[in-house]
Amino acid sequence: MHATHTGLKQIVGEWTGFRCEAEFGVEENGAVWLPESRLGERSALFLASEVLVVLGRNAIFADLHAAYARIGMGSECFGLFVAGLSKTADHERWTGVGARGG
Image (tube, rainbow, N blue to C red; front, side, top):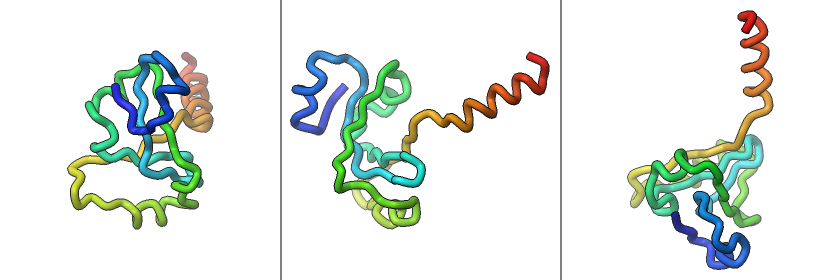
């Protein structure tokens, strides 16, 4: 696990979850853009039980249209938008379970 934010070690100490710094974030859906250069091992983000992503307050776009215009894949082979849990999705899951009688 790695961190690109210099002050992150002081904040989390010896915490062992996955941590990285997002390139930018999207206000409308709470997603962050993580290019390969900031991920280290790709699978670590998805296998970790705890994830900490640092985002600078000046790196937030209002919507996905502005964020997509900012993505520069010239030197990166991989990148992805990651968003947290969705309360709507959780509600739909429970609605679906109830509708099936489970």
